[in-house]
Length: 58
Image 1: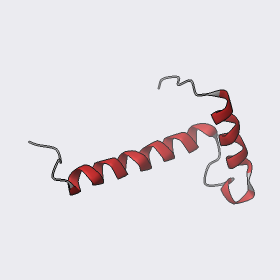
Image 2 (image 1 turned 135 degrees about the vertical axis):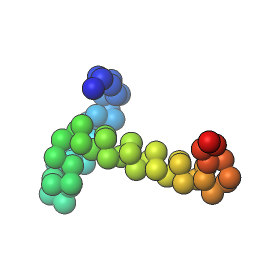
Image 3 (image 1 turned 120 degrees about the vertical axis):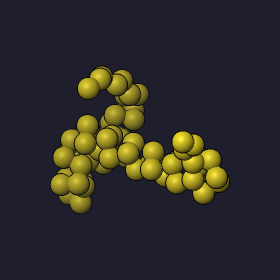
Image 4 (image 1 turned 30 degrees about the vertical axis):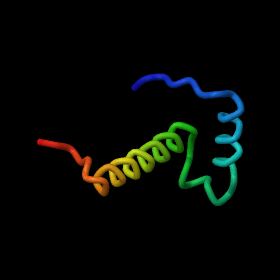
């Protein structure tokens, strides 16, 4: 696992978001939040590529 540096203001926004009651269990930590958000975004990008006919070639 690597270390990733994020902008200080972005980090504060993430902390505020995960402290909200409705997000407490879904995002128990900054790491969990970032992992889930990045994973969701990668899936979206992969779906867009697939829809455009740019899927993985074998």
